[in-house]
Image (cartoon, rainbow, N blue to C red; front, top):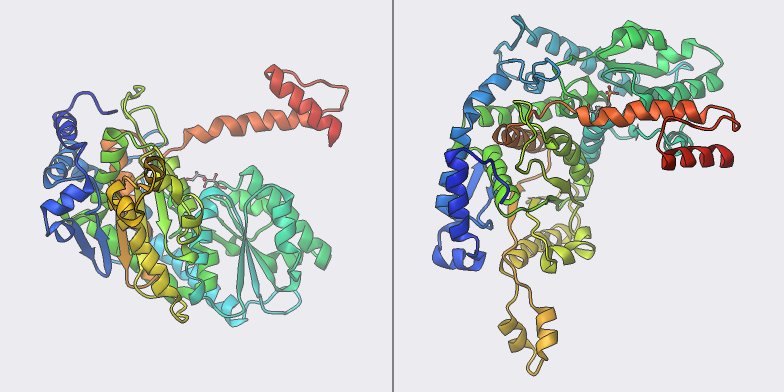
Length: 542
Ligand code: G6Q
């Protein structure tokens, strides 16, 4: 166990853990025919079945007590009401205002932010309508057919994931691409098949200073200048999404072509801000608004549902149960849906950048475990790769299975087969296959081979099942995980909305770049021996 040392709720859970840690899911299900019902909740069409977890009613009671004792309710209110909860950066955290579909004001420093939020959304929608209708044309008068978003991290992963997830809702003929990596291959490969006349760049950067994005943006601008030999073309083919209007203007993008957001929107929580522009261009305002409605519905649920019926809270508590008591190191995210292929990568950032912290809010180095390693791939592909370790490896890996009753693209019996696998895997993980069952199937089998063919089971999973992957469902699903992560941060007593851990590498990269720019005869200094040698080798061989 790796738990907070002091508080009564953590201590009570520790004692409880010792009493039930050896219970198996098979025993727990055998003891209670109502178990699935007892440990399932529904929100709209979204079912969360968490019965295949190594918990009892007492476990949940104690976990809820932990949430109460951690003043979770007050923390939720503090976030939604615009208090400065991102203390190390001195900012409010209000991604929920971006999708506030009620008429309630949201105040930051005494000022209602909703008029500005609505105005930007209005501008984005109007712009998207023009581009989609062919009324906004490129420099030579041709309609725009390709959107290339240039951004990285929070200015890439969210819209990129959602663009993939909502492909069936796209305007036919409108293609959306995402360039993030400073590796020139990414830009070159993306642009190689595109006609500049039909291409619009969305340069997405909260700060408008990020090295990767600005380098890619300058190369994209050069690509346009080469094609059109006119600076005026830039205005027809580049728009910006940023909080930094001065840097946008300095880049040469007109104020009217900039879509603004605010410092109270964290990068990894920014999909509902102007950062969602490429998605809006792809799926149109109606579908984008439907996604915001889904976010808002889950926000309201998180804010108002009792802890015992609160889906994000329950996911968070179960994660803590495995992370801090069973000492699980990772959390697998397994969407049984090809269009959610980027969802694990997206959640990886939201979770690991938010809760990958080791200093408490009071500034002390902490002694308990915080955020898990988040990873995953779509099923059923993943069954043919890493599932072996999930089933028979030595590690305990809690996994979320995410699936849908209906396909976005029905075709024969594909979906039924996909979902058969979805159910079969959680069943196999939970209940395994005993040596006795192996022997019954294989009379005369050796002890050794029977051991290899035995599945111990008892591997925990959550099942999240919605009717269909729509913009609304996607919004609900993302908000579910955002609030799960927030809840965990509160219980671990860490700040979830800063990311100081990414600074050091950025600063050092600037120094290394200076060294790489020096002539060969100037040997690098000021680094360790290994780094100096690698820098010099790069200079010699590039
Ligand atoms: C997210 C992080 C980070 C950020 C990128 C891009 O929460 O802060 O991933 O989104 O570094 O930053 P810019 O949008 O400022 O270019």
